[in-house]
Image 1 (cartoon, one colour):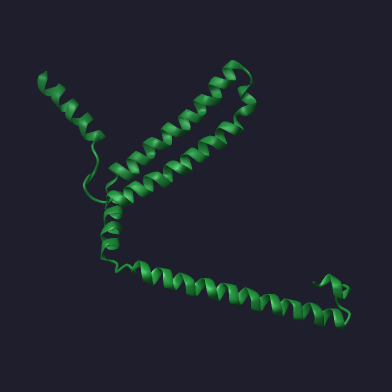
Image 2 (image 1 turned 180 degrees about the horizontal axis):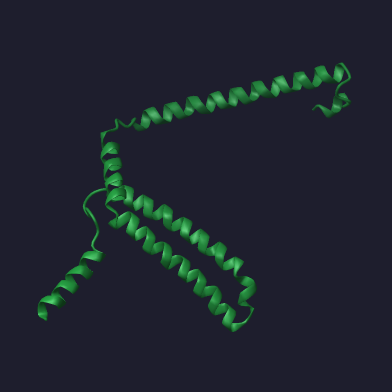
Length: 153
């Protein structure tokens, strides 16, 4: 009899355990945070969609209950995917190990590259603005656009 109880407790403890708990920490954490944000957004949307039912006391229980059911259901699914499913956990572990192998750029290199990109975007937008003005002048001159000269500027 005691043997059966200890097996049941061991099975319950195993269900709540996390597969490879010391590996893939950051990928699991970021996935959990992103997923939690999506679930919260969905819960907010669902709560708003259930507002017509919330005009009565029973309807308010229904509105809150359905929203809580949404959150709990997704929490269980995400716990299973992020913490228990061997296939997804192995993927998270592999992703994190590959990220550690990447040769990340230094802060100076990132700042320099960002400045180059921003300068290029500004110059390109100025060039496109000038070409757009030239096209407007050209099409106004040949009569395709019927805008007065003052409307261009």
